Length: 135
Image 1 (cartoon, rainbow, N blue to C red):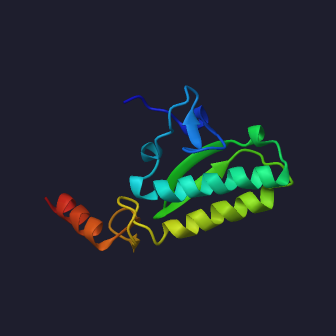
Image 2 (image 1 turned 90 degrees about the vertical axis):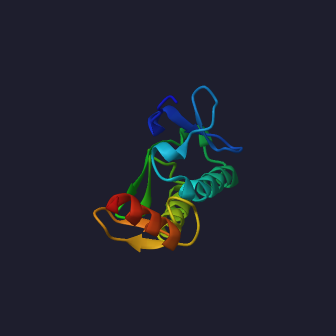
């Protein structure tokens, strides 16, 4: 599987919303667990809609980084059109907040757990992680 960075990806108006330059869907699991892909897809859908609603130049939007930090999702963007900046930051803040109650591995309800790195996990994934680490 070829590695892409978010600098190589662009947001589009239709699903999957974030794509590589060759048009293939951007794989969020290079950056965060697959459990957060629904959160990201929903956030990018809302961002595309916000640009359309404001009549802002959608082609100017860029994602500079997606990552996990301290158990939560982080979405960093390039410069934003002033007509959408508040709305986009609100959408990103909501997505980041949702990540703290969603298992990063499977997408089920979860909570931040300590143990080396802080990870937001459901009970089942936390148990599997403990078994893997303890083995």
